Image (cartoon, rainbow, N blue to C red; front, top):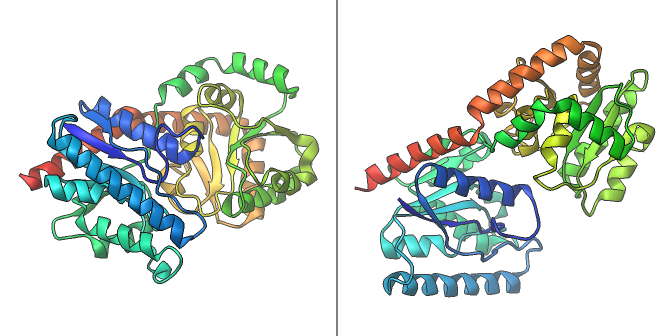
Amino acid sequence: MLIAFYAPMKSPEHPNPSGDRRIAQLLMRALDQGGHQVHLASQHRSYDGIGNAATQAAIRQEGDRQALSLLDAYSDDKIAKPHIWFTYHLYHKAPDWIGPRISAALEIPYLIAEASYAAKQSGGPWDLGLQASKRAIEMASAVISFNAVDDGCISPLLKDGAKIASIPPFIDTEPYAAAARERMLYRGLTAGQYTIDPGVPWLVCVAMMRPGDKLRSYVQLGSALSRLKDRPWRLLVIGDGSAREQALTALATVSDRVHWIGAQDVETLPGIYAACDLYVWPAVNEAFGMAIVEAQASGLPVIAGNSGGVSGVVNAPDCGVLVEPGNPEALAAAVAKLLDEPENRQAMASRAQQHTWEHHGLNAGASSLNQVLKEVTSCQS
């Protein structure tokens, strides 16, 4: 099947790394692995983070222009006509101005992965994008959900016969599995590079440093870890961003235990994960946490706040520990327990790794997507 793929929030070929770009890339890989031809239909970014009417109008105009250009190319056979249009991540700040128009003109199914509709934004600075997202959801043949939090807002908008298809988040687990097999090697390399005592447990978190929920998570992490100074541990912080100074402040009370690793690319991350012992993150309003999936694939148990879709990727209590959101005391108690029980921690690590390989790997993702595509196209025929 030929699939036209589009990510209005951030193209899979965007130069700046992010979770959005990563998931878009993984979706394309999974579709390819499922035996489909995937065409990146556009790199047009429709995101407006400020709420500027003139900016949004210009974004819409460019989207309309690209839609017409694509239709001309399909009509002239310059590009093969797709059998389905697949849009990843649309909401009021990043609507899809291209896919619905193409799908309607070519009379092909329109599929969305990760859609959001916030009715409270109606009449606000992003109303143009909100209404466009609403129309897109209303014409979708199916909406793929990685996180059930938004499902209640999406369901009432779906047309007859369309459904929400819940799919577990997935990654390519092989690089993490390979690194986990060389754990002691990566432990030694990381200890030497960043001057970390290899004889004590290493905690790790991977997160952007930006205002809002991410910074609140750093604040809660600092509060939790400040309660554990009586135990030996080190924290590796991987990430960077505009709120770096605030993140430093959030962890100031344990600054002598923290190693700031900075942003890392996808090639170096598996080795750092594998070198560590425990992934810890408060997960304030986390969608599901791709880093949590990566950590488990590397053989780390996870302790996280039970918010958003985190429970869908942490198979607690077998593979990790979920605590009450916004409760640093509970987070500290969970970390203390696993620090004090190395055998339990290791058993949990093995189960987390196996569970992730089986349920959150690329093969599982490809199979789940193929099932949705099969249902969508069978209903269309």
